[in-house]
Length: 117
Length: 108
Image 1 (cartoon, rainbow over the protein chains, first blue to last red):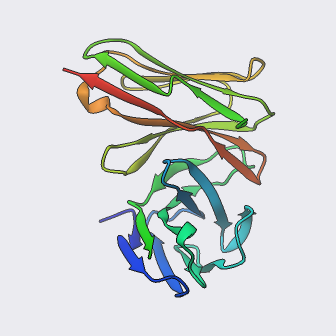
Image 2 (image 1 turned 90 degrees about the vertical axis):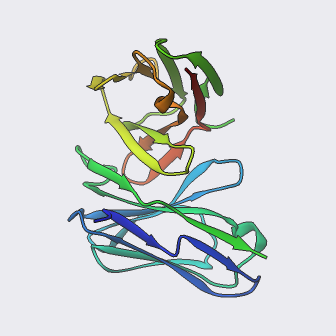
């Protein structure tokens, strides 16, 4: 059983489209994250949710909107896709979150490669 | 200038060598995170530490909060250790900043 699963693994879409990437974790963790890795392999955190509450919201365009229907899911919706959105997006989860004394079990999904053409 | 700097950016060594990867940062942190990204792209969390030293198998991570510096050591390195190693600083509850990564290649 995959601990943190993202779908789709690959996504090719045209500029201007709206797309979603789904993430689910079956580890019972209370915190989930979205990261973006650009073409230079530089990782950057985008969002973090703890028990469905947004706790990290880095400066990303408003076109990116995370949605957490429950603590096992954190989906990423992107409106009006642009060429610069092309990247690999990683979901992750942990028990505990930045700011707490203890964070355990940090686990990453396998990534979603988004290509905007 | 990034708040997190890793060195070296690239490191090639022979199997069995002792490896050290460094991470320096310029701001106050609550913890530091070491990650490993495999050639296939998957990311694994190695250590999260806020003081002292942690060990897991052949991997050792140390941090010196006063000097704003952390090191990741690999003993008896093996070709399967070849990966990109990334450090990230955690600032309170709100911010994570990543280093640019160190690409490690271990030759048999």
